[in-house]
Length: 298
Image (cartoon, one colour):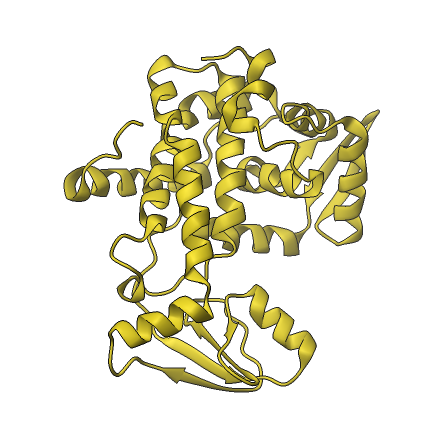
């Protein structure tokens, strides 16, 4: 395992430095939200430094998130802390379900006719895609916005014609390339789990994993598994993410519990929300071992 000082040259961090704002969102979503939503600014700067993001960029990004209503500043003496707003915590909690919740289940469809351009943009950000004219279609998942004249729909005739339509409408080829790239990039990390990485290294690598997975998963339209190709690479990506996240978490969470602070002191190492995440991902790992076999080493 490379030393912490060498992590920036590690193959898992090559695509970095990332956009500071997105990295901070990843840090708050993975570390801070399930532990109360508050983090000392000094710790945030230190974590971002592990990805080549300097203090000036961090402070600018934090100010941007404050202006957007995602964070709010709090001071205690000479120290500054930044807390997620109540609205942001709700949003982060919903997003966490995509990463740490169960695998996507079968579902129906929503079809809507929406003529307002601003609302069309909202639909697109929430998994809808244009199906011709002003008509939009999405898998019926919790939290989908509904605008215009909307209908629930079911598939009458599954088959190649349906798969071709959905593949084109949702650009599944591009999504498949993204998931395949994720697997190719992170599969070698499974070897590192046998080397007991130190806490800081485990946390930085876990954040890199979450950041890369998050960028893809948030753009996944979450289609029913029955309409996806049999060799859909998203399935392998989900299993790999679960395996690596669980494998890195003992060391990473121990580091969090002794080195990262909110106003009251060290962040809790493993509160109930963190345990629930790990239990959910561990169940995916068990399903892989009993059903489809473990992911092979590269």
